Image 1 (cartoon, rainbow, N blue to C red):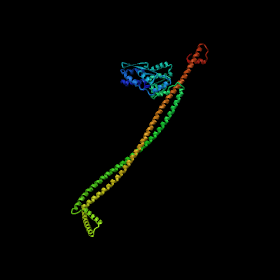
Image 2: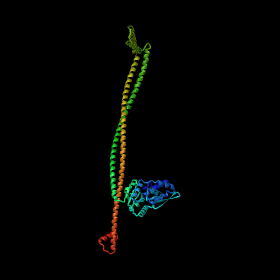
Image 3: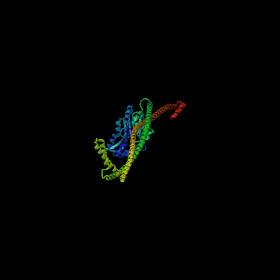
Image 4: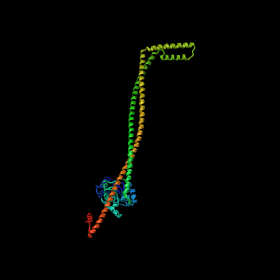
Length: 490
C-alpha cells in the first residue's frame, strides 16, 4: 500500500501527527532499504506512536492520497479477469478504506492497537516478519487454486523481496535499490497506469504483443528525438541571432554614449564662452556708462550730438517731403546749415576729448571681443545640438534592436521549452522501452525455464518407469542405465 497504492508512507504521516516524524522516518528509511529487520522496525516505530489520538488516525486514513494511475490499473486488471489483493505491513484502519476506494478483492494488513480512543503503541497481525508477505501470498493463491507463478506482484521495499522471488512477474514501482536487481520490471514513474501494458493477458502470444508495443515505442522515441533535435537547432540559431542583436545594441549604446560625451563637451564650451561673452559685455556696458556720463557732461552747454542729429534728420525729411514756398524753403535750408555747423563743431570738440575717445575705443574693443565669443557660443551650441540629435537617433535604434532581440529571445525560450518537453518525452519513452526489454527478457527466461522444467519432468517420469522395470527384473540397456544415474534413482 504505502508508496504504491497510496502516495505516502502512512506510518510517517501518523508520526508527524504524533510529533515524532523525524525519528520514525529514519527507521522507515532503514527498514525499506533492508538495513533493519522489518518486524523490529515496525514495533519500534509503532511504540513511538503511543497516545496518538484515534481521531488523528481516522483523519489520516480518510485523506490518504491514492497513487496516480491506481484506479485505472485496478479497473483494467479486473476487466481482464484478475483478482486483486493488497498485502501491506501497514494498518487495516487505513488499508480497508483504500481497498474500498479502489474496489480491491482482498486486503491484508496489520492491526494498530487502539484503546480508549488512543494508540497503545502496540501492533499485531499476520505481516510482522520479513517473509510474511510471501506466506500471505501463498495462502491467497492456494485459496484461489493458483500458484505463485500465476501472480503479478508490485512493491517498492525490502519486505517485498520474498514475494518477488516466487511471482510469475515482479514489478518494482519507484523502488528502493534493494529491489532493483531482482525485479523483472522496474517502473521509475510514479504512475501505476504504466503497469497496464505489462500485465500478462489471458489470450494470444503476449511476447509478440510486447514486441509490437516496444517497436511502437521505439518509433515514437525516434520521432520525439528528431523533433527535439530540430527544436534544439532552431533554438541554437535563435540564440545566435539574439546574441548578434544584443551585440549590435551594445555597440550602438557605446556610439550613443560617445555622442553624449561630445555633446556634453560642446555644452561645456558653450557655458565657458557664454560666461566670457557676458563678462566682456558687462565690462563694455560699464565703460559705455562712463562714456555716456562724460558725453552728457560735455554737452551740458547745449544740445547733445544725438539731439542735433535728430533735429537735422527731421528738417531734411521735411525738406524732401513738403511743398514749400521759396522763402520758407530758404529759411529751412539756412536752419539745416546752421544745425549742421553746430553738429560738426560739437563733434570736433568731442573727438578732441582724449578721455572720451579712449573710452569709446575701449568699449568698442570689448564689444568686438564679446561678439567673437558669442559666435563661438553659437558654433558650439550647434555642434552640441548635432551630437544630441545623433545620440537620440542612436538610442531609438537601440530600443528597436532590443525589442527585436526580446522577441527573438521569447521565440528561443519557447523553442527550448518545447525541445525540453520532447526530450522528457523521449527519456520517458526510453525508460518504458527498457521496462519492456526487461519484461521480454524475463518472459523469455521463464519460457526457457518452463521448457526445461517440462523436459526434466518428462525425463523424471521416464526414469521412474524404467526404474519400475528394473525393480521387476527386466533387462535394461546402457541408455536406460545412464538415464537412471542422471535422475539419481540409481
